Length: 202
Image (cartoon, rainbow, N blue to C red; front, side):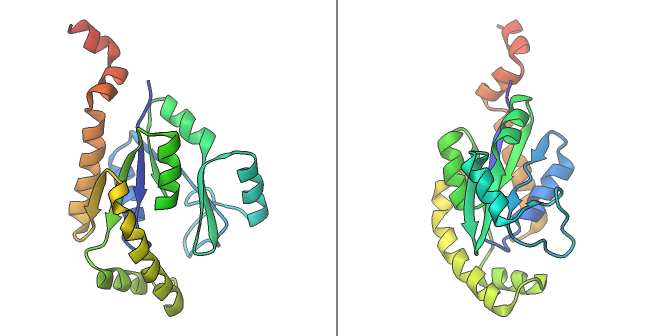
């Protein structure tokens, strides 16, 4: 029996972190992979809860040892998803959410072609800029850079299976929950998770 892997990607400020947290809060069968990163913690973030915060030397050593399912450099910082934890959790039947960018999504899909890709987009670039500004975590220069990067990232939307427009947060939460639940109802997934029941009904 194996769980499904969901890839959730989005430009910075589109709201993917809030959506994923709400999904996990409402669905006890979903776990989020905690990524490794070389960036400094933001206010309120904790090591091993939000990210595994490591220095660049440690990250590069892990990468060289093949410990990442995917890794990428974003805005000058390195990010990576631990390979062994993700595979062990999936093998145990848990659904896993990977909150990564489009570069990481491409790498994961090569290794896990059945992974479900979900791309979260803001309702407009102006709204995205306002959210980044309201977050009050980055300078104006960094915000300009993130908005420019978002335009490039949005060109990869067609590489994903689903798109969620995060205009109304409650609607977006229902959208991501619906995607997870519908994936569980696929014949292949149901047959794997409920093999005895399916066989008994034949």
